[in-house]
Length: 461
Image (cartoon, rainbow, N blue to C red):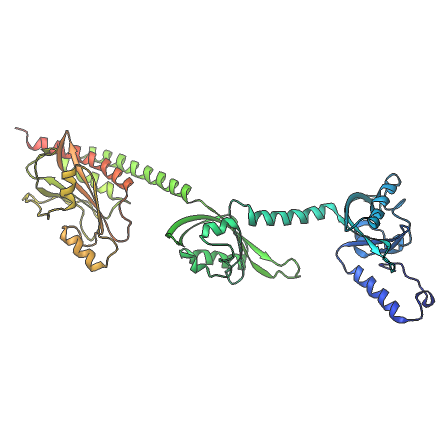
């Protein structure tokens, strides 16, 4: 006797063997279920008790079946009437009734359980008893918490959650991730990641493959990606965590995919990068000032400032000085003479200009001339063009052949224009931005001061 009360004789069951087989099948089904199950007849006598109920409470089917209610064995005597009333009330109520109360184990311990009970109809349609399924409350709460957590992650989470299958394609996407990826939740399902990302897909797929093979990494990873959106490509930084998912039903772990959780930290990373860049540039200005202070020749000091400014900022730099010396701001057109310049095609210190002092034949509208006229910085770029046209663009402006982006800043001191400093970048770098112009202007102030000192010394009587 394991799951239900059965007679031990053929006469009580009846002459037909199929009834015995049916009872055995019912007992096997009840014993094979993960839920604890018991049943009561209309008088409150226990008629069924499966193995899961025995596991939780320790009472076997032999101990339980045939007893009247739980009084005196599975519940405290003081609570028995209330517990029995709750359970048997299911016979008079529609649907399932849910209750929580404490049961006693065979060893005398107490277990808080949650029960679901419902009436069992008899042949005449009237209730013939009650079946009751119960589980330990903490196990039920754990299950409900897991379900609630899953629903919250996929509906209300403030970070992206994507379940990626073993083929590295999204299988489930939460609302936040869909917004971050610029698409609808269902539209993302089953699509290759390469259709969503213009850059960074190799790094992401490599991370997912590693997690499938080796497990989750010990710390989150920050990945820069470029998204394909209706508004164009967008550069984003995602702080990502990964979890390998395996089937809990298999004896050996069977991979189901990877849980990918990410937050967009683009703004904070850009702020960090800008702060780091500002610290570096400030340090370069300080180092240049110290090195220039050791130079006896002011022109050499100006070249030192130029060399320090190049680090991490530009590929080439040159200085054009006003022919004939400084001129008051706004005083007619000026001619420019090439001064110190970094060597083209190889790294190294700035090279001094020749002594001939011949003006550079810049065409009308040249950025350096515009810079003098406006008394402000001027940015120029060859744009997205082929290398041959870029070389022609640079040659027409008398700049090194690999120059693609330019930033010209006027050199001024004491209300006079001394010349122009030009910074040049190759195609491997980005265009100059507004923050770059601010740094270049700081460099220009220091160069202008040294050049003004050199001009003063050159014109001493």
